[in-house]
Amino acid sequence: MKAQLRAALVAALAIVVVGASFGSRASAVPTGPMFVSLAIDPSPANEGQVVTLTGQYSDPDQMPLVTIDWGGVQAQESLSPPFGVDTFSFKTVYKDDGRSGTPQDVYTVTLWLDDGVNPMAQQTLTLVVRNVAPTVTMSASAAQLLDHDTLFVHGSFTDPGVLDTFQASVDWGDGSSPWTQSYKATDAKTFSPSHPYLVPGTYTVTATVTDDDSGVGTAQVALLVQSPNHAPTNLALTTGAALEGGSAGLSATFADLDAADTHRISLTWGDGTPVETHDLAAGILVFDGSHVFANTGSYHVDATVTDGAGASTSASATLAVANVPPTVGVSLSSSSVLEGDTVMISVTVHDPGTGDTFTATFDFGDGSAPLAQSVSAGTFSVSHQFMTAGTPTVSLSVADRDGGVGTASASLTVQAPNHAPADLVLSVNAISEGGTATLSGTFSDLDATDTHSVTVKWGDGSPIVRLDLGAGATTFSVTHPFNTAGAYTLGATVSDAAGAAVTSTTTLTVNARTSQQLVDGLVALLQSLPLDGGTKNSLLTKVDDTCTAMKTLSNEVAAQSGKKLTTDQVGLITVQMSTLSAALSCPTGTVSTAKPNAPTAASRATNLR
Image 1 (spheres, rainbow, N blue to C red):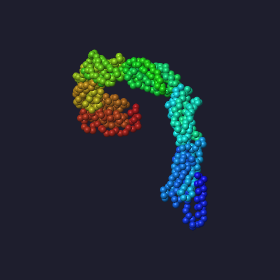
Image 2 (cartoon, one colour):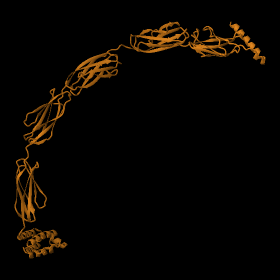
Image 3 (cartoon, rainbow, N blue to C red):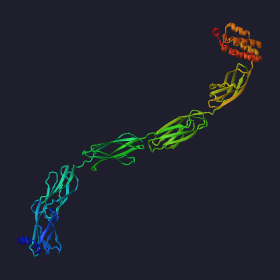
Image 4 (cartoon, rainbow, N blue to C red):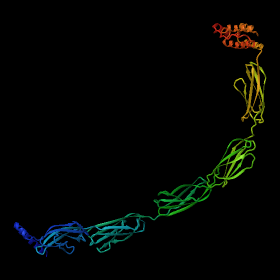
């Protein structure tokens, strides 16, 4: 058949060639069918892949039949394009690249074009069909096992080469013989072998599927095989002494044959607080913890140590928490009061035992009955009236419910009410001008221990005088000079330490001196001055209670000023002379007030003698 087709094609080509040689006559010669273009997509192709052949032909006189042979993989196909359509296409799937056992095979694709009138046209193409390796998937029953446990795997594979046969194997990664199985093209492409692992370690399980054309597909899973877990053991707890409100310590030690294990320790302190957990890294087999117990008592502490696999060990211990007595503070609103006054007593109570209750007992130190009352931690106050003078000590004791007692105290001075000094009597004798007055006073005070201060006003503009009297002193005497005649009101005030006071006044009469007293005073002054004998006698002989004598003496003093008399001496003498001159009613100018001449060197020397 193929030989006949080829002969017909050669004859047709010959006719075409002969017709073409006649030039313009060729258009009148019928043309047989021929292929204009042919293409295969894809090329090369994979087994199991859809392959499409497209083509175009030329046969203007007929409607040809197009036949294709895909290389013997299936029966020939034919089609007749509709009138006026000069293109065509065929599709097929190569179920296998071939049975050569090679990665690819070559197929010859042949097409014929037959219009039933002219010789057939024939065309061949070459197509490479490649093998496709199988695709493998696999899963394991576990990622971790203990030694001597069995691993189960399940796998499947696919291959577009539906005519392929396969060889499957599973390598367990531990040196043991692999599992193997052969598959025909029609067999279910799954596998589910199992294998026991006897030695701890890390393994890679590999599934390999090889098709009949040497295509290989693989899948892997990782596996960790561990030794059997050992529970932690030998948990021992050690506790220390503890006080309420303070930190109680606990130490724990344990053992574990699995050195790489991590652990969690759980603690129940027995006081109703939540369970407390702590994580320990691998290799840490000790734990030190602490807990604050709010109240006294005996507590049952439970501890559990658990490893990563859930194995555990437990232990318990008894922890005694001792009472702490309350801390107490007392302060008074005043440290010194009068009889009958009320004092506010402020109290603070602190106790680390948050659940404690307290009884406070007050002893006011004044003989009154003690006061007892229930109180809470914190601050509070009570008041008490002190009726008797003295120095009582206010004492407080606070007892908690566990028998702990805290104490505090504060000192107080209670004084009797103060009595003001009274009955102040002043006395003073009349004096002459230039004399010194003596003011005397007496007073009384019911408070025998009081001290007093006395202030005196002399009534002449001079500063106030202050006297301090000790306890029990109720009299005083004080002096003051008066140079000018007149009547003066003298005042005195006696005050005690509490500020209570009594005041009294009296009148002092300062009499003017007689002329004879003034003469005697002037004589006494001249006699007291450090003058040479001649000067002093000369001056003394001129002293008399007459205006003439005053004038003569004044002239003498003026003459000696700066010579035998110093300026200060002249001033003293002039004052006395002026007073005597006024008392004698002498005419103005009797006593000279002119400034004396400046003393000469000789006079200064004489005065120095």
